[in-house]
Image (cartoon, rainbow, N blue to C red; front, side):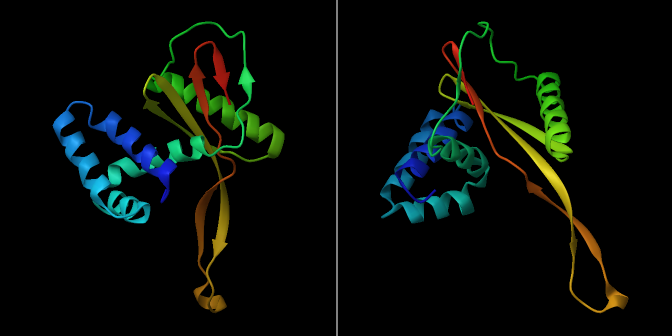
Length: 162
């Protein structure tokens, strides 16, 4: 995030979240632009404008993917970003990972909008056990989640990019 692509991702997310307040957006962009380097811009965003961080990191990930697989000849439909459609997509991805790899029980699909593109970031998570160190008397077991894969979908004209 501390590079030019990261800075553009932060600005794109700020554009979406501050679309109702263009003056505040302009002030935010000027504030970041006045900083001396991208490290400072990333840190200020993370610490002072944390609501932009999650979307910006996903846009940055999309920008730095080495390639996108194109799926052509799909029907022309508006992207479904309602909760029921996102839950259905999450269930399909969860089912796929469960049958092919035996994991992906907890799947979350998060929609993001960037300009005219809708991005969908499905994150299937795997639950694994974590045992803390200590004596057998004080043995504790906790659950942590870790992403098993991270991939994105976006619709661009007549092509689905994966």
